[in-house]
Amino acid sequence: MSKYMQLTVTVRPYYQKDLQGTYPKLARDLGYLDSSLANRNPSLYELVGQLDQLLYRHDGTPLREVLLRHSEKLRNQYKIIQENIADWKLAQADKLLYGIEDTFDEIESELD
Image 1 (cartoon, rainbow, N blue to C red):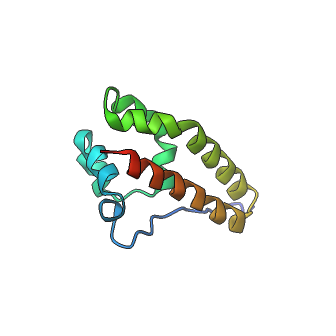
Image 2 (image 1 turned 120 degrees about the vertical axis):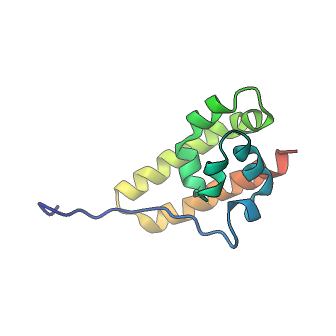
């Protein structure tokens, strides 16, 4: 590693429109308590990184119940992606991001 520089890998959102256009129910429910979160257009990976905070802040809401059902799977996916990024296995990490997307598709379908 360089003495004054380092390489980083960033997971950025890449929605056709934005979070609200892609996951309208999720964005709506996230916006109830923190409108700036959905407006910031976070990546799904970023949301999983904040999962414990989201569960805490949305205590007693339908969003929390849906997220809770998927929390273990999301945490495992996140951990494996982090490991792949740390090992510079970026193609594998990219493939694993599809798993997070699939889980959020399920979450979206379960929200009212």
